Image 1 (cartoon, rainbow, N blue to C red):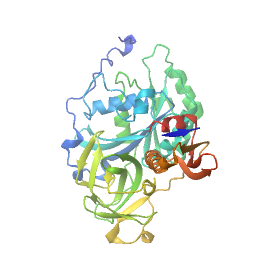
Image 2: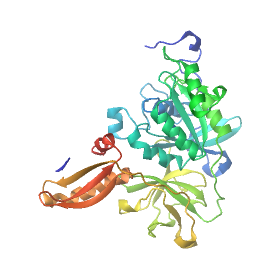
Image 3: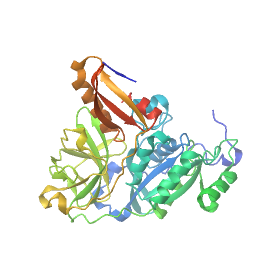
Length: 395
């Protein structure tokens, strides 16, 4: 034991509601030869917005539209996999899904990242922006521009990301799209004519959003598949069967099962045991090609070795000193601290293991060992806010 301090619609939208707009020619990613998709036909995007502006619902409708999941009224927060996310109805961890979108005669691979909207999880947004070239800026047509709308916009703007503005919840009776577009023009200098009207709940605007992703977002800057292999660590989590599992994005070369890779930051080597894509369910593959995102299990024993932003390279092609890092992720500064101590000092090892698993799932948590005369050995953990602390107790 441990302790710690029927649905109503507007008449003029009736044609669009009822969830039509879903093409019969859906292409699931499992039916596509991923080696045949060139990097120029890959798009990496994040959905950013203020809390409760409809990011997860929009992600659900996109996954339904492309056929990644079956259409169902039960599809709510499909990408929110943590128990705390479903209980509280909020996103606390950025989640990725790789989908295939067919436009004309071409098939595009879109890596979609659903990000949290609460300020306590801003580090997830920062991390996601490093992995994408464009964002869907979602704004509630009823509430208008909010605090995290501005914070996320300027974070994406400073990273020079392509920004696709979308007005969500246009079906609400009190929605005022024209007034909100004036706000976006004044605050962000976004042309009102470029703003997409959408309703994630009923599937309005999904086609327009996907088409704009294809036309406005540039492909990832990657090398050829015959170059020296490099990838960077985008995310990590703990799996009780596989241990530490890492989400990576390949920038050069090909990542394949059996390859021995090394970390630039820790200089440790790992043998790739399994690979796969998140579709959003785990889909095993033998190889991951340039521009693609996928997970890898490589018997990484210590959660401390999973450093977000770390660059991995083929051990047989050189040393870490010869490898240029792909991205640079600056750690967030913790604002709230709490002390964790075991009631029985014999359970200190169990406490240490539990904290390591928490840090593997959430790299923004800082850990400092400390010792108290009255409580014994324990840890001081740093969080980005009170909600961040409360959520981590569930992990």
